[in-house]
Length: 446
Image (cartoon, rainbow, N blue to C red):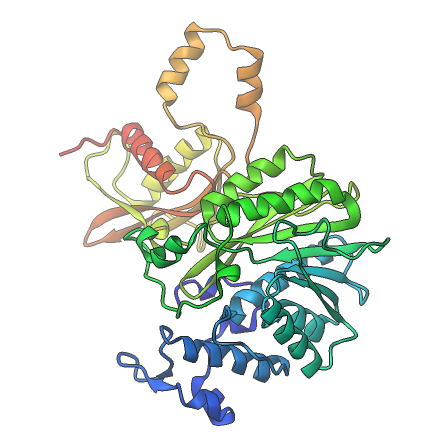
């Protein structure tokens, strides 16, 4: 579960599941528990739809006291992911100082399991209005609500027109809602559902969970992009009737496109986040037309890719002009270079001394001062800056780039490393900075 450590800090599933304990308490789940071929520990076959379905039912029962029916032809909700979304909504409501008992939310396309409303009602006592277009799913959802005695908090609204999402679906009246949420249909066509694994790059692990769901839950004209665009269109009509509009997004590129569209939509505030669990990353976007609501600042999210965090290494040759060959002298010179680039530099761990065998800096850049620096210097000397250029150079991005710079002695040689930690520029910027340091230190390629 490569992404588990990046889950929401309050998500109880950050810790590994105890399959043996769950199997001992839930006989129906025990039928699917097996010994992992490599780990030798109890697990399930995540490619088995029935096993995944029973796991979801078991987690809902054991951790939330919910008895939920999930039909074999319906989408199986992965509980850690659903809980991530719900916890983010809690954060948004806390941010806007609306975390009381009178919260009223909307779940767009709740599905047969009705999992978001059930979790929200049981966990937080929120009132939920759930919409659904499939007649069969409406019936099962109503049974799930009734079976858990939550009729006083959850109401199911049958959608009669598939072209409508919010406008024309919500009950008429003066009711205002605190938020809406949605896990939109992921695909544009049936053919996409059959080739979902082909779109993954070779750097990504193949999907491990069993694939399931009814067509209406998985496919919509234009896929998730157009579906959420329709929510945005409705939000521009409903405005403050819903205080915070949100949606989950499955494709990173779609999240970028939707954020760009929202920036010109007239929304007063918007933000986004990442939902990480298992081998899966999803994105969440939120926006509001309420002028009094200030959502968390829109930041570039960290992409949790193992390759990003691999350090770049450089073995420092002994012949460096004007520098004694030691970690202490090298890192002091590198600190001088970083300061000249207007980086924020802080020493990590034990303070350096002349005899230090290792040292580490935490570094933060808020503007690109290193890229093509010599060319820029020549241009500045020969061409006067325009007012626009001066303004652009003065603009700072607090989330541009953060990284670690470290040096240590390995077999009498000094090894220098740059490790990306976060920032919108990504790891490619470290290649440029490393080359800049090589040039400044006058290290010659052999």
